Amino acid sequence: MSGRLQDWLAERRPSSSVPLARWTSRAPVDADMPPVGSLTTLGRQALETALARPGRVRESAFELLGADALITYACEAALEADDPDASLTWILRSTSAR
Image 1: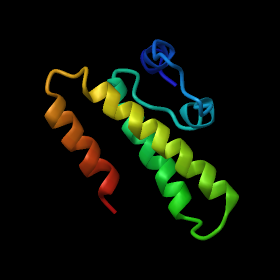
Image 2: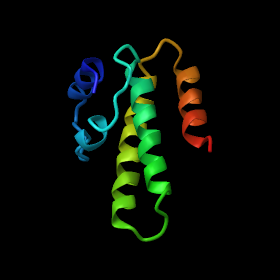
Image 3: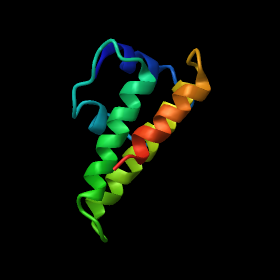
Image 4: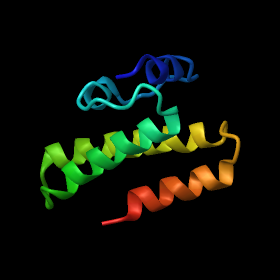
């Protein structure tokens, strides 16, 4: 995980109730990418992992929880962006595309 994303997540209050290291350490993200981009990318990856194993699979449920937390934080990061509306629209398009 990039230092920029790690620092951003460490500043969140209250901190996440979902241990995000499982996802943030899984895949490299561009160190220069703003938190909104990194979190959306990681959330999308978690969502795709969950969708790859449909049905009542416990592991898929944990992936969905991770995706939810990561995308929720992406939305929070979007509110700090220069153009929150454009950032939120990008998150929506990035996570709904299949």
